[in-house]
Amino acid sequence: MGGDRWAEGINTEILLAADAEIEMAPGRMRLRAVAAEFAPGQIGLWDGISIIIGIVIGVTIFKAPPLIFSNVSGPWQGMAVWVLGGVLSIVGGLCYAELATAYPRSGGDYVYLTRAYGPWVGFIFGWAQLAAILTGSIGALAYVFADYALEIWGGPMVRGVWYAVGAVLVLTLLNLCGMVLGRAAQNILTVAKMIGVGGILAAGLLWGGGASLLPQQAVTGPGLGLAFILVLYAYGGWNDAAFVAAELRNRRRNIPLALILGTGAITLIYLLINMAYLWGLGFEGLRASRAPAGDVFKLMMGDWGGRGMSLLVMVSALGCINGLIFTGSRVYATLGADHTIFSWLGRWHPRLRTPLWSFLSQAAVVLIMILIVGTAAGRNGLDSLLQCAGLSALPWDRFGGGFGTLISGTAPVFWFFFLLSGLSLFVLRIKDPHTERPFLVPLYPLLPLVFCLTSIGMLYSSVNYAKGLALLGIVPVLLGLPLYIISRRMTIKTPTSFLETKQ
Image 1 (cartoon, helix red, strand yellow):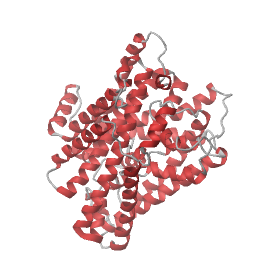
Image 2 (cartoon, helix red, strand yellow):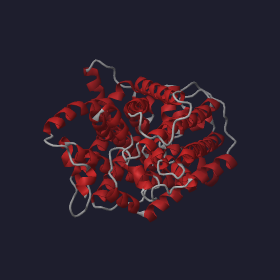
Image 3 (cartoon, one colour):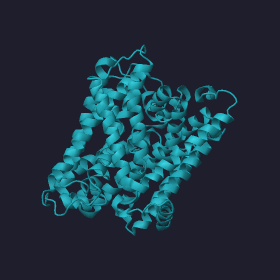
Image 4 (cartoon, one colour):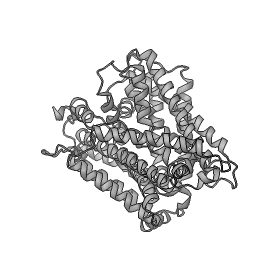
């Protein structure tokens, strides 16, 4: 989940260099692209910490807090959820650190799942990126852009759908033409994000204090389960950070330190930002806010200040969307290179040097998702399908708009594969007992069990709260099973790897 944390800090030159030098197996090229800037074993402890922070903190913190605090009974319970999310992320990061150092080949979950359970699970994971996970993240981030655009230009909520559609179409077109945001643009986006964070802290903590922190009404959302889903989505990226950790010097010492210090710093930043929201807007004010960053900044600089903050968030969101569109296309190109049925996804335009059909397929799936959850026709159509299957129509208002709806609909798929990756640690210790493991999870098997139980809890909560909406992610992913069978029958010889194809 959580696409925003994958895109931050990626620049064109690093991506193109990584594209030529590494095998980009589905799911984790984005982190290997960042790591490719460094020679193996040349990333120091503080390099690792800064990379982790840069990957994780994106635009979710500018959008998710109102949804999170709408699902808790009070401000202290909400802050406790953020703290627990940080602790659980550290536990998960330690588990991924063992997997990443034992199997340092790029591809991450794709590698672990294929090695532990067989190639069909790796295929389903790669397909899930296109059918639900990556595309759902792009759509959710497009709605972050749209919601803050509405804060600047106003208009009915339905207009936000077309802002989201426009962002995806324009950025996809730029990528199709071989034009992606370069180093200077990415640096501007990073500066914009840091200005936004600093502005929130200053405005909320120094100009706030006039609003009440006391709850005036009961929980207005589904409850704690959804709050945890959104919090862990905001923390998402520590699993990607394990790939950078695999490149660290003195891995036995620096991997746990980088993960603990990096995730600890992120937890502190998130807590400070949420304190600024609460102190500036009050508990009920934060719950009711559609764009909390802009609303807090209004305290310091009025309406123009709020619009300026909204513009910064929009710019940051565009950078995240662009990064996911770029890297996602390479994920599907790898899927096409490795599996016959999707060979067309692996075709690169000879002049533009872009995976044309990967871009177009990705855009089509994202636009379908945006239109389903954001338009009356799309929602009514999905409700009709659910009723034909004997299920109830969805209470759309409970999901908090397009962002919350897409996160809720695709979260079950995300947590299912997270659970499989956690279990693969146990499977691979049994299956590959002689594989060198430079880093071992402390307190084994307790911490891996905590991670797996957390994944089970989040999988249950995401399915329970999404209910019929979970079909938005689950049904397309299940279609991957017959597709794999067809692909196996179509395969005449072992498919050439993506790296070999390019060489």
